[in-house]
Image (tube, rainbow, N blue to C red; front, side, top):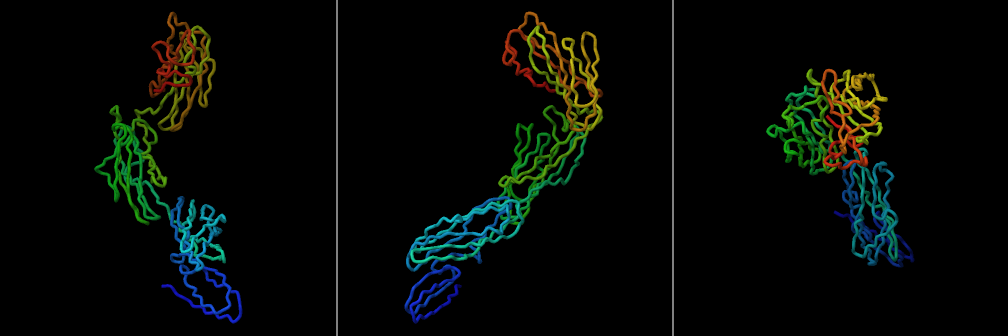
Length: 457
C-alpha cells in the first residue's frame, strides 16, 4: 500500500522553490499558495520501479554470463514534456573478476515520452569470485524543457551462487588388475546443482577396451542413453539429461567391464594405465569431472615392449653411394626393467655412427659384412627411447629392374620377449625422381616408406 504525504506550503511573497523526494526534483515558480503530494517512487513525476528495495535482483553462477533489466523509469511529468535520462551505476564494490555494463553508463541519453516508460538493459560476466551478494548503487540523471533531476534510485542486487559440480566415484572394483583377465567396475557420476534450477546434459565416453552392462546401470533421475561407436569395436558414448532444482543432486551408476578385442583376446592385452572413462562433462557449462584410471600389470608371460623401426630417406638411387638414418624406438608399456635389444644390419650397409640417449651400444661384425647392434638400457614404465644409426652404402645394383625393395635390417628381438618390430626396407630405383608417388605397380606411400616414416609392429 502506498503512503501519501501531503505537504501544504503557503507563500505570501513571490518565491522559487524545489520540491523533491528520493525519486524526483521538479522546479516551480509561484506567487500563491501551493499544495503538492509527494508519493512513493512509482507515482512521482519522474518515477522508477523497485522490487523489494532493489531495481532488480540478478542471480547467476560463477564463471557465467547473463543479461538483465537494470531499471524501469516512468515519465509522469505534468507538463507532458519529453525527458532525457542517463543512469550512472557505481561498480566500485564489485570484485575484479566481475564485469558489468548498464545502458547509458557512458553518458548517453534515452528519451522517454510523456506517459511512457523505458527499461534500461544490462549484462554481467562473473569469473571465479566468492559466492555472495553484491549491491550496485545507481544514480539517475534526467532533464526536460523546464527542469532537471538527479535521483538515487533503488540499487541493483547481484547474487553469485555456486556452479554445478560433477565428479566420478569408483564404488566397486580394483585400480590395479592383471592383463588378459575379465574385470569389472561400478562407477558413479554425481552431479550437484549448487546454483539456480536448470536442465543439464551430461556426456561421457567409455573407451573401446570396455563395455557397459545396461542391466546393472541406472540413474536416480533423468533419462540416459549409451551408444556404441564402430559396431561394438569402438568406444561407447553416454548422454544423460537431468533436471535439478537449486541444491539438488543426482547420480548415474554404471557397470563397466573389460571386453574381448576383435581378435578374441580378453582386454587388457598390454600392460599400462587405462582410463575407465573420460572426464564426464556438463555440456551447457563445459564443466568436466575427474577421470578414473586403472593399471594393468604385466604377467610373467607378458613382455609389454614395443619396437618401432624407421628409415630415412625411404628410397635411394641404384648404384649410387648413399647415407641413411635408421631409427629404433623402444616403448616400455610394462613395469620398469632392464632391456637388451638386438638387431642385425645387412651386409649392403655399413654402420658409420650411432646416437643413443641412454644405455650402452655394441657393434659386433658378423659374416657376410653384417653388423649386429646390441643396445642395453633400463626403462621405466611408459618410457620411450630412440637409437639412431648412421648407415652408408657404396651403391646397390638391382640388375634390369626399375626398382627393388632391399632389406636394411631384420626384425629386432628383445631378450626374454622374442622378436619385435618389423623388417626395415629401402626402395632402390633407377631413373625416377625421389619424391614419392607411383613406380609401376608399387606405391611408396602404400609401403610406408616415405621419409621419416617408420613401419610399426
